[in-house]
View 1 (cartoon, rainbow, N blue to C red):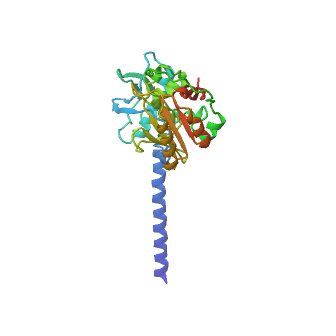
View 2: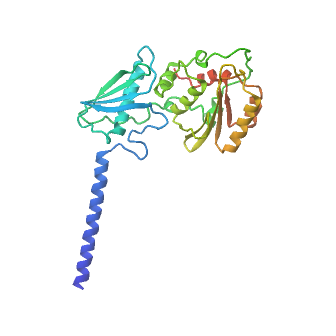
View 3: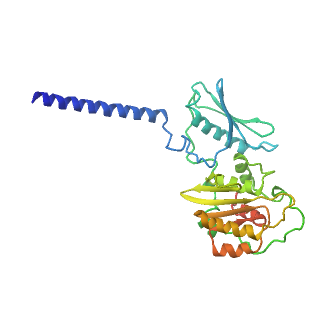
Length: 308
């Protein structure tokens, strides 16, 4: 009997020791990374709305992050501040790959033809990052309705009653015709879209990213599957090349409708810099989950976001 009691005591001690060890390990991880949540890289920022990074390195007491972000000739203080905040989040994600214990400053650089420093932030103390923002700084859903969702497409619908006159000659670049509000310009630039040369597809894909969609490009050339909140959106791009007919072919319009039906996606968005034939109105009436964002509609769609 004493031996049985002794064995039970040993087992109890071992169980307690194991529990204590596991608790210490858990506490250590929480202390090491108190802001990290599963799947978000520690910054709480949607992967669909991050400034594209081309380089990150530690040099002396500086952590330098370079973004593939086109800049205007004139400095945009708000965009610069946004990129500095983004740079801090990049360092937060990378801090286990490179030592930052001696880092005093986080430096943000950006540009295409000419890369330049756009700003820097001094850390509270060496190697200690400020708390992450509660929401993504590059998520338009925080400041306006998402025009890609089914409910907002209905509630904030844009009226497209008049068929546009299709010109007989070549179409100029859409970037020369669109008026993009400054707020949207900043967001698009921050995701790598050059608003001065962007195509209609570039703009729509950039907006999807700004609204927190993650894009899968494996659907085929000129096609994307956008994911957000458990729903999928099929995005198909009809590119315009000089010499093309300026109106989307009716067979292309029908093909997209059929492809959407077969895709199993919750919504479908067709994007083109060409004009649309009148038949799109009938298709959208029969299938309200489909939206054709063609040349004559892009400006109204952008205006509907009401970003100043």
